[in-house]
Length: 169
Image (cartoon, rainbow, N blue to C red):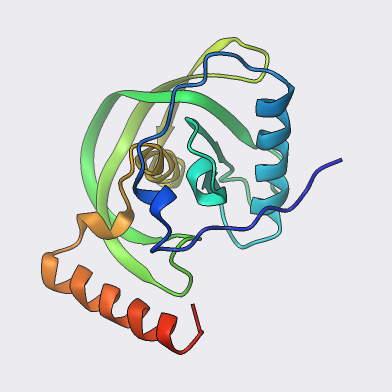
């Protein structure tokens, strides 16, 4: 049985904590992965990292398939090759309502371990590449606003602080 988890929003310290490598893929890790899928599917999201649900482990899920039939569960993912930076609009479940143009690599190769403890390699381009980079950034305590110019990031942070004071965050 899966559970929908609470998505942590900007300001929660777990989002700025570097995650721990997963050394054993046990039932707890598998349950977390399936709960994260359930949580992502209950939102308009296409990716979710463990810190976004309050768990500081190196686990993320991505799904660029509009029918949500091809989820990729990535344990201890790393990007091993990247090329051709392009700009594109990006949002984040931890920043509801905020969308910004972010430069990311158009093409990447990432390696990760799947739930069956097998090493996998994925060549991703375009939207899927963007999602994978975004989620791996979460695992490294980096947020999409970190790519913005300082004035723009400060503007967003001020807006979020106002929303926190009024209870809209």
